[in-house]
Length: 150
Image (cartoon, rainbow, N blue to C red):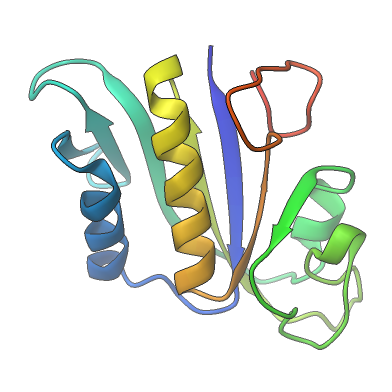
């Protein structure tokens, strides 16, 4: 089972800062790059399967797109929207003049990875002025929740 979080950041998550955040949250787990440097994986063993996968940031130039795509998702607001307005549940505005955002996806690909992925998504959102969309907080698992199981 997997669970997914999307972080829409107003400030660009520089790769070295993102790697540092992943390493800090990973604790004694192993962090490695994969997919030609496009993904960061967190695993309990050096050569074991990943528990958490982080996709490196992508710039979404149409600032209203995250609000449209994730309308109805559970949103955690970690700062005011960049353009001073709010979209669904505080998510970046649906206004055509909304500023671009940086999109980061965090995936828990095992049950053990869920608390790590959730904490990481919240840390990324807080560090880079963002909002987090994902499953409701905690260990509950629901394939019906937006951003929940795949």
